[in-house]
Image 1 (cartoon, helix red, strand yellow):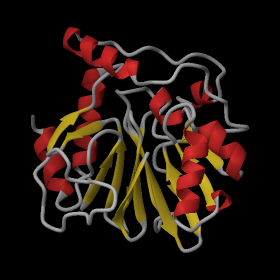
Image 2 (spheres, rainbow, N blue to C red; image 1 turned 90 degrees about the horizontal axis):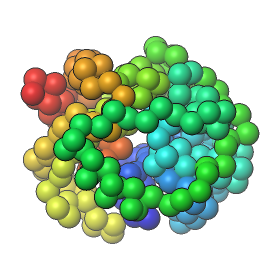
Image 3 (cartoon, helix red, strand yellow; image 1 turned 135 degrees about the horizontal axis):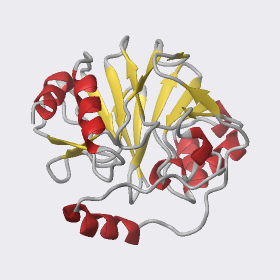
Length: 248
């Protein structure tokens, strides 16, 4: 796993499939998404490498139930005691009470999905001991007040997290980025000049028309920084990039 500092209070945790984010408020940490099965101990190691303890992570906020985002949540919660939070519509699948609905794939998505599946570990995720259910508009106690934004389409319970005080938006898989190759690398300084990104609406969706409505909702938010479930974040001028994506 790669660990990349994006901002003084924000790190990107990049897995072979997908990524998570670690946000710092003083002595308290928040994890946004948790990688695939087996990621829990790896995340704990990364937290220690940053000079913190896993127990400093107070909450794990899941943007949706897919395996590349929730696979390590139960593992890391068991190691850290962190609270696990997810939207109420995806929470039953995070708890392991039922399998989540499969995405409705377009024909062009089939080979992409097959390639992604090759890199996903097998097995069943360890369910978190409990899941706090979220609804649209709730404000969470990190990042100066993180607003829960319900963005259905990728899954019924997909959420984004908007930190208005910090100008940061976590989109989950509602939006993805195709960055220039090698822009963000471990140990290298994050570019300070704007980097051209190609943003696109997320793939592997339950309901693509609803997803596109959700992309437009995110484009209306005033975000300077946008962090995606897949692809390098936009670190400057994210709102303009999102508006261009919503107009596609």
